[in-house]
Amino acid sequence: MRRVVITGLGTVNALGLNVQDSLPRINAGENGVSTITRFDVSEHVAKIAAQVDWNPEDHGFTRQDSRKLDPFTMWGLMASTEALKDAGLENIKECTELERERFGTIIATGIGGITGIIEQQQVLMDRGPRRVSPHFIPRIMGNAVSGQVAIKHGLMGTTFTTTSACASAGHAIGMAWRAIQLGDVDVCVTGGSESAITPLSMAGFGSAKALSTRNDAPELASRPFDKDRDGFVMGEGAGLLVFEEYERAKARGARIYAEVKGYGSTDDAFHITAPKADGAGPARAYKEALRHAGLNPEDIQYVNAHGTSTAFNDSIETTSIKSVFGEHASNLAISSTKSMIGHLLGAATGVELVFTALAIHTGIVHPTRNYTTPDPACDLDYVPGAAREMKVRNALCNSLGFGGHNVSICIGTPD
Image (cartoon, rainbow, N blue to C red):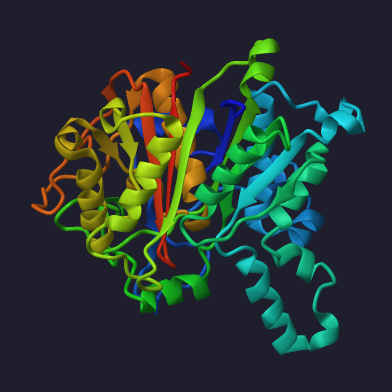
């Protein structure tokens, strides 16, 4: 099997519109959660979210583009441009078509173009079917993000979108890893993008009692593994990575952030929204990732946890980690990116793998914000308070989603 490495990174999130701006704020444990300002939240149970503060026109999008593209697609375009430039591959369109067939695009979304759905439903109700935009379908379809990224950069290899709730980007990343391993492509842009901070989606998750209602203190709301956690905080944005075949990357002198070593994917087969209490499903995903990587549990130093800040998820994730790692679990550094930028649903694994790769590359593991009150059910080292300097040779990045989906990605320093 061919080896796969990460040579480019890009992100849009509540703490920054690129890696350069996001990384120092993530490592400082800063807060990206605030009161929602883009629509009336007076009757919503959860009035807070980790919003992306941006102006499309500042990033090259015209008003016409905003009518044709949902935010999740625009953020995917921004993050892909950043990641490809970071990899030194920004001029793919200058390559021959034969060369461009070796570049793929596998990008996830959990919900897709819900902004456009809500907008055009209102047009339909107010003005009738003939006034619905001709751009409606290509704007809201989930695969718009992968298709538009491929078009923008001229990527002619395998291109598709995965959708599996909070595990969506994890599955996209696994498919990209396999596509390069098997020789389908040599380079693949992968990760996820999501823009689900809308009245409808906030109402739906609120009715499901999944969201934090710490509305008077948004900076304290996302608190994974903490005893006083009361639900997750919705986030939005994108996290994209450039995966590349190792020998190709080495030959062109590319900077390598990390090697992608393993991928595990399982399902609880238990309940559409509730995780199974024994944590066996996630545990099997971790084991699969380790098996593919040829590593033992004690070879892992860091885990970027799913860590949503919900009561059951955090305790069950802790149980699953302990079941796989045994005594070594207490030696692991574990942190949750969601504590600062919220839960990006289908894009979560993409953004979190960006910061996992940076932890390996820089030797700095970001903290878990708001972990102040220990929970007896969550008794591992969640890197509270401040970032930690440490050598990370190998790490897992985990995601667990509605539908019982469990994904674990193993990355590390190239051997």
